[in-house]
Image (cartoon, rainbow, N blue to C red; front, side):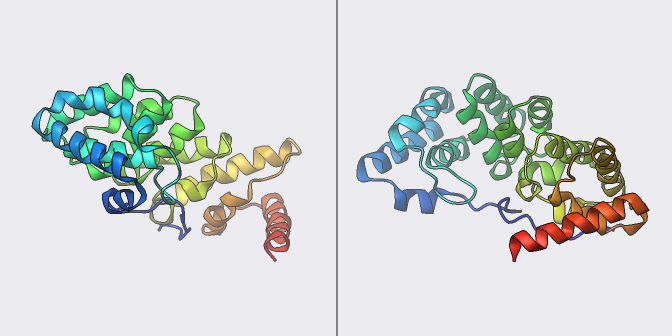
Length: 234
């Protein structure tokens, strides 16, 4: 059984950003992007030169809840690649490993738009071993929700809690939260209570969906925290 928790900032299936991006760019940036995508389609190695330039040529304002403008422009370049399978995965990994954090976030956010199967899982795992919260959040998008094994997905959610990444930014929690994850989060909550610290409110929907993981002490803490949350929201 999976708990039903909304994930409003992490769409399960992000649309290709090209239409919204083109509407947001000025003529100069739009021309550069279209010509660059055509160049990548004709000569894949060109992406190594054009991918880093996207932020300077197109800007980096927020486009929507999922994309910034530079991330979306880089997604257009990545999806223009005519490569498939391991060749595509190798190029994606190369761009990520040689990129700065903004470029790495763009690669991670674009993964669900690429036909990679499980080939990009090593990249997700590598990111989840790091400590950059913006990259962890980008890694836990629709691609990870679809491909990350259950045990690794649970550990990733727990890491988000430790790193104070809001769980509404983790894609798939509404369908992938299960009894074992609830138990892990309940154990975490017990540790927080024992240390005299607050229990993060965004673990409540997962834990409360599986009442048998909640002991009396945790039930009391959760009731108090839920009351506080309702007061804050009301």
